[in-house]
Amino acid sequence: MKDQYVGDENDYRKYGLLRLLAADGVPATVVWMRRWDDGRSDGRRTAYLDRPERWQRYDPELFATLADLVRHGQRRLSRVEEAGLLPGAHFFSELLPEDAAGREAYFALLLRRVSGRDLLFLDPDNGIEVPSVPYGRSGSSRYLYLHELEALSRAGASLFVYQHFPRVARAPFVRALVERCLAVTGGCLAVSFETRRVLFLLLPQREAEGLLLERAKDAARTWKGEIEVAVHRAEGRH
Image (tube, rainbow, N blue to C red; front, side, top):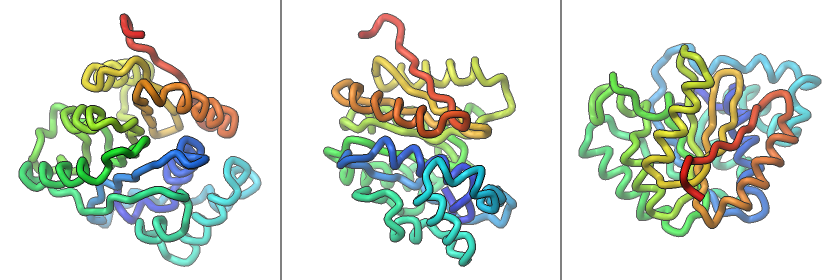
């Protein structure tokens, strides 16, 4: 995640989902997986803020706050943290290194800080690892690696992960991603939240499944027509 993305369309959907999943006292930690701004055009999709009649109904309070941040040139993660968009959430805001040793230290610190947290949101620029970008190499800070996902799940956290859609057929991509993630976490089910450009994947701990599935249903109702919600169950696990 980079400051330049703050307030764009994906951000609106992301915080909207988090506000529902982590409502009513569910403890949450937001792991920005923060990277430096690179001067590219990413994050410029803010035209939706000029169409309140179309967009604000999903979460009026969130819409108004993001519009204010963009309007006043305050597109920074620190301002999101200060704005109270995610009441009660903790934030892990350290810069994510590219090198393997630095990255290992980053996740070791994260594991110490999130002990006992129920919901952990991971916000890599691109999503889950790809074969073309090896761990610890240039560009690896754009990805979350499966062994990191496994360690966080073993620590007891329910996981909520950002994934940018590549230019491939979506249904098989989602199915394969769910299978990969459930294989490393040992979970029984996953919930996908599919938007125009981005997928969010919820991997609940077994004891949190009932509550988080209810929250996912709330999200499906609230964001009907804008976010497609589906439950995926691992074969042979109950």
